[in-house]
Length: 353
Image (cartoon, rainbow, N blue to C red; front, side):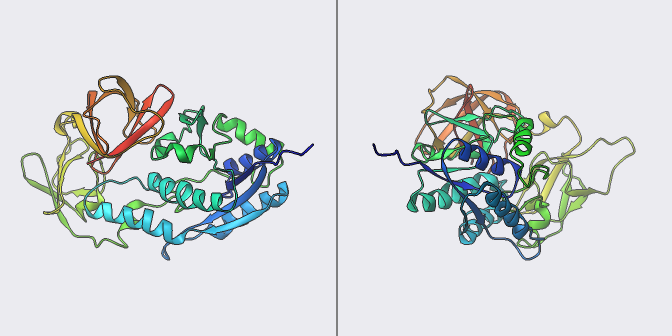
C-alpha cells in the first residue's frame, strides 16, 4: 500500500510567538513544515532589527527540527507598500500599509513563490480563520486581524492556513511554553507591517518635505500653524500648534484640510456636528472574498482596525465601486479601508474615494 504524501506548508516565520506556535501546531498535525523568514525593505534612518528577528525564527526552526528558508521581497515591499503609502499621503489621503503588505507581500509574492516551489499551503500567525473558503474573524476579538485581509480572493484562500486563528492569545502563550519554544516569553511586535513601531509622521518627513501652513478655526480666523497638511488626517487632535487660545478652550480637532493651500481647519466644538459625519460614502477598489452582498441587506462594517462594528446597507454594487449607507454618521478619510462582515464572515471591502 502506498503511503499518502504529507502536505507541505510554507510558514511565514517572523521570530515572534504567534508564528512560532503555528510551526509547532502544524508539525504536530502531521504537515511537512518549511519555515520562511520574509526579508523586506528597510530605510537607513530606522533601527533595523531584521537580523535579530531572523535569528529568533531560525532558533525556533532548529528547536522544532524543520527546514528554514529566507525569501527576499525587498523590491515588492518597497514598491507595493512603502512607495504606495508615501504616494497616498502626498495626495492628502490616509492609506493602510498593513492591508497592502498582506496583499502585495504575504499573500502576493510569498504565496506565489511558495506554490511555485511545491507548497500545498502557506500559513501565517494572523488572528483570522479560514473555513469553507470563507474568511472569518479570529475567535479572540481583541486580536482579530481579518480587517487587514479584506483583499484576499478565493483562489488564494484555498491555499492559506491560519493555525492560531481559533485560539485566544493567552492560549497561544501557554502553547509556546508547552512546546518550550525559545521565544515563549518574547513581547509582541507592534506597528507597521515589517517596519515595526514607527512614528508615521517622522517616517514620512524623510520623503515629503515639511511645509509650514496655517491653522484656521471654523470662522476662517488664523489661530495656529502646522508643518504640512499631508501629515494629518481628519479627526486628529495633534500634529498642529494653536497659538491663539483662551484658558477655557477645549481640545481642537481637524475637521477639514486643504492640501493645495496647505491649510488645516480645526474646531473645539462637537466633533460629530462640525465634521459633518457622513451617512453615505462611496468606495472604490472593491473586493468580495466569498460572497457578493445583497443590495439593501444590513451588514456590519469596520472603518478602522478594531473600530466599532457599524450597521450599514450597500447600494449600487458595481464591479469596482459601491455606495454604503450607514445607520449613523461616520468619519472615513479618503484612502481608508472599509471592511464588511456578514455576522462572523468577512465578505470583503473597499477604499474611500
